[in-house]
Length: 500
Image (cartoon, rainbow, N blue to C red):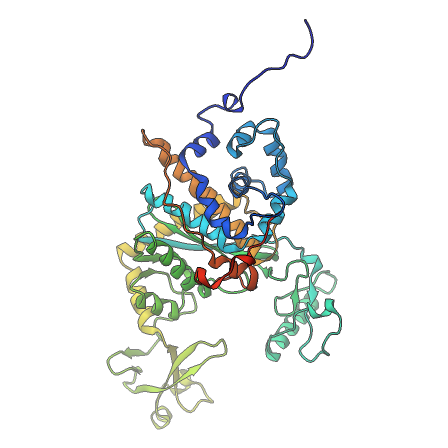
């Protein structure tokens, strides 16, 4: 007889056992999430979204390369494998997309970092991380803000604003010389192409009202855009991400290297691993970084930046007596330490004016106006020389190739396949949360691939993490992106909020 025939079945029976999400559910015990989220959930109030379901939903979003919470819930509503992965029955309604968004906004960054650290621990337990060699690199991630909506910052000498909207406008902090240089540059562009529209914007003079943390960045041959910098540290053994960070995009990569190294080392130390080697490209080079890596007992393989000069033509450096020798056999002795216009410390060497006066090469050596010849080199010349000598060896050449083969494919995969082509969340904290979940999804996929290749493996789990109640201080009292870890006794239970 024609008509509707109800069928009694189970959702588990409809999803194959070899499906990706079923394998992930069998390989990973997600109960580690609850102790980390416990300080931010209250026993009273309206029932909240299960933290395990929340984390699984975010992971699905990056595994499916979906950046919209609304689209993510639409897919989960129809996908049987995702429903089974979340633990929802066919007739059970899924959470609203607004609940997922509000939960992400209210939780601090440190909770997401703790979840990422636990996944790194699973990879270490599986033998995917050696801990010795780390490749560091970064990439721009497009922010959720428009270049056409940029506004000018307040001038230095402007009157104090009286409205709340004007109070949020940042003040120009650049020096007068720097601003004059920008104006001359803009005038030259208008003179060269007076009929061409558009404007030249800079982080020194403009900001985005929609996302004040986003910064204007550009690469040669590409248009300027508002973005964040995603800095990653990747283990060279199996390309597992051991650290990821959301940084502002208006600083050089070298400013972030030591923070990345320290955070990676701290995470590895908690799992009894030690880092010995750091490999990065020339964007991370600086004399201070070379010095600090050696002070930390780490071996670096970082090419020097193009502005560094290993030697001065026609002059020989005498390292024993700290002086230069010219072609006429005269000495340029150390005069004093100075700081250049960019703030870099340098050592100045000067010849004697009387010797330069009678020198036959004085005109082409020191010029017509100078009284004596002067040379400068960086305060970290010794560290530069050691780094260049290390890179010139066969091992150094191998490390440079290893960096390109290790970290660059990871960044490309995160941007192309794990939802990092652009950020839908605003603020540096929002960007950091997205990066941590994307790195978790990437590491879990590697962990699952290794876990399924080994027969007889069951669900692996680390010891349940203690409730990190120091996060409550960050959630309630701190407006900073970084967190200071404090003891449980300093915080009362009354400060625990209720999530929707």
